[in-house]
Image (cartoon, rainbow, N blue to C red):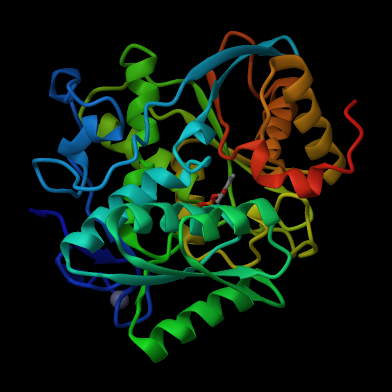
Amino acid sequence: MNPRGYVCSSCSTVYSANELIWRCSCGGHLDVGRAPGLAPDEIDTGRRGLWRYNKVLESPPEGPSITLGEGMTPLVPVSWEGSELLLKLDYLCPSGSFKDRGAAVMMNRLWELGVRSVAEDSSGNGGASIAAYSAAAGIDCTIFVPAHTSEGKVVQTRMYGAEVVKVPGSREDTAVAAQTFSAETGVFYASHNWHPLFVEGVKTVAYEIWEQLGFVAPDNVVAPAGFGSNVLGLYRGFSELLAAGQIARLPRIFAAQAANCAAIHDAWKGTPAGPRIPTIAEGVATSAPVRVPEILEALRESRGDTVAVSEEAIILALKSVGREFGLFVEPTTAVCAAAARQLCESGVVGPGEVTVAIMTGHGLKAVDSLSGLRPV
Ligand SMILES: *Cc1c(COP(=O)(O)O)cnc(C)c1O
Ligand SMILES: [Zn+2]
């Protein structure tokens, strides 16, 4: 079922993917071994969503037992500051965010391994997604969120039947609360930021973009980054395609962050740590990402970069995307739109290049933080 297994990023210990673990005994995070890539005729075109790439996923050959129709989201061309951009509408996944890619792959494996109750911490969308797949699978679910999380995401998570626990303090305090709960109760910690199968599922976005572009890679991909699953999923998927000889080179990967809380940006630029203060982009407000060396490797190997954007630029981009393109995204996603605009304006991304921006979360998730904004 799983020939690749998990490898520890710190001590290189190898585990079977049939083991019920979320990190190495040394405390390091685990990664799934690389898949061999895929030729166009190996796509299971009988399946519409991300399971059409089943051959490169850690899942049973016959496919998933739990699916909500995740994946195969639209790639919509728009014109932005004189450059052509392709917007990947991943917020059209079933729970309204790209997190469904990772949650679907992870929760299917946990279900097979006999897990019947999970807990995790989230800024909102990861928890909503895990709750959705838990509901579909009949798994008990407890989600820890920061006390200030958007009410839309909290209500959504509760509607899936999950228990929501609000934790005062920072995003990291929420993670500690969930891990303590899991350690004390024995409920499996199904963390989208730790479990190796989460990034494995998110990598399908790269395969999809490749297929949608007619089996070529774009020149550039821009993704919002908090813990970096999108950046790492893109890097993983396109690297597998490169190793298989299916694309000529990696797209440049750009990680977009909110300047108010830009840990990856600071690490990449090698500058002293900037502020770690609240941002309207709650989904990327991460002061301690767990996979920084891997994220920096993805940026380096792909000749990419980081972009940190101001709160004003985030709100401006959110409104522009709505008014100019008819797309309603949440502020976290507007970070990516703002970064894409900055890259076009500065000429880092040229007009003749194929550039994809990942639109990760639906605007309806965050109406409470947006209702006070004037439309234009
Ligand atoms: C979680 C999330 C992100 C950031 O993903 P990371 O894996 O933390 O980098 C971006 N956009 C939205 C809408 C999210 O929910
Ligand atoms: Zn280890």
